[in-house]
Length: 244
Image (cartoon, rainbow, N blue to C red; front, side, top):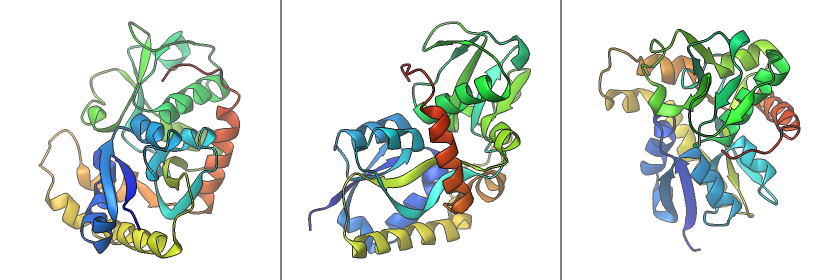
């Protein structure tokens, strides 16, 4: 069998998955690339990868997506790495700048603004705006930079009562069951050994990696997370398509 082309997110939240893959013999059966979320989606949609941890919004664009894992990038409350940052309260936001690294987080921000906060805002992809979406490692330690900080996963929970699923392991083709089982075993090993991953990270005064891995992130792709994907994609489909 040829190596399976795997695209994984290059953010800290994926490190347990990467650790598990690298500790497993599966690493010799895959061609692994590290990408920002939007690039993971692009590769799966355009058949430049066979399997990836793709933002859930990309499931709308993959012709026959196959979710192959019981693990995901999710949160049951605040995730602490997907935000709207602003110098104004949400009630005064009229323009929103998107983050070009994740269509899913942009979509979540727009859904919450429209359906939860009841705000009709103008979306911009660049330039000055009242508020902006930002995700991933770039947000670490940034919660005190702006007076108004909105953790999007937390507000999704308040809105729907559901956790949020940011990305799932999905394939754009049928993969052998033996490969999927071994791949899932590697992911499980990595999640179970987050303490090892934590020891390798530098100490920061402005961000608690332990709390992030152990409390904010929820790696289980359980029934509630699946419900969240269905609910989010239903709302996502009603948004006007914009870049980002």
